[in-house]
Image: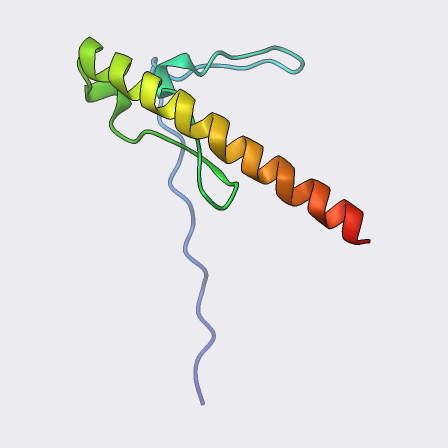
Length: 87
């Protein structure tokens, strides 16, 4: 027979001052997280090391991602139209 265990608790929130407070109905810019990446399966992600990139690397990444995202979004739109027409 196993004994029931107590679930682990989450740590208390920190008192860091760099935490952004967001009010209800307000907006937050996420530019510092970098550009959105459209993955080949249609999901979205971000560039993990965006904050560590040089300005030249960021420019190159934006150029490549813009072109790739455009193609992937077009492919997702085609898939959606094909699904709609087959129903």
